[in-house]
Image (tube, rainbow, N blue to C red; front, side):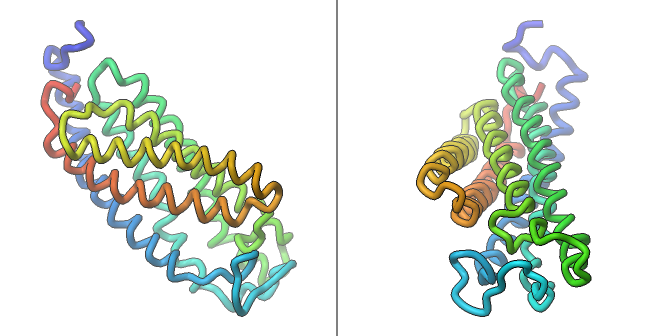
Length: 245
């Protein structure tokens, strides 16, 4: 089959149309949920680390229970965002032109890694680590209040994988509409900023990069999710049939 032709395969065309129908509401839901989570996160004051300005806690963070559940509300949408983006990336894969599907498949792969890392890290924080801290069952390395802990490392790695997925998904979407251009631009820009920030902060902050890089990578990724979610939702609704294969 000619790789530039997509309408010659009825089964493929049907699959792409199904993907477009799923992708539009998922993309809009992703944007809305990200906006809610980001707003909650901005309004949640830091209670540990270098940016804490009052009512701070320190190692071994055993008194973190007094901030539960207020400090954890932002994690509830955070658990859902990477899996939703993974679903959207799969839908992009089926709607993209055949010539760019290797890129969209790479995007799906990185989105899957991100979903596993971030969702597990946040879910573990909510249902295991916080109760464990209250009962002195876990070492402090697991809590989100520790800028050098396992949670922070998993979260940052997950968001870097999400940024990598942004790059490949943005290269797969044909830029034939304003919505597609905006969505691709937001994802590719976020990917560039994320990896430049990682290298720059690793050099500039060294072992103390945990808190500033965590704030930077979440801000960059989540803003991109809002913009790309809206833009790709519109693209799914109006994607040309010739690309739905």
